Length: 199
Image (tube, rainbow, N blue to C red):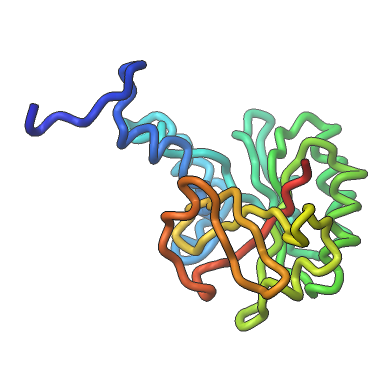
């Protein structure tokens, strides 16, 4: 019927299935740039509102983890102090924080070692590495495991918040998406972070 959202067999609208938990709340960062009390209040209001289903994690710099209340939401932590912030995240998790993801912009040559540290110190926590503008994906993933065809299996975070997976970075440097990921239209400059997929 016209005007109604298309439903899948489970009764979930296609729109909701596409957008659910799509947005990590970045109230502490530009353009909002709120202080912690205001950011947390904005987050509480958003999670109590009619579009709460679209929200996923609350994004917090590692340097401000100590400012969070005991009832803080699930977190994505920005390593604003670099690799050394991993210990801060370890301590936060030990103190009861629910950290699901860490992210940072680091020198591409450090990505393999830092990824290994994340796996060692933060088992079960995902990691996204922000790529410096203009750097090719081939160089970023050179030290990562390859599949039988020499490709690197990854997922990509785009500037608009979409996560695209699975994506293969070929030996040529070309990017190929499989399944639904193959139909997503994006440019290299849209990619802000990359994560390795381990089989």
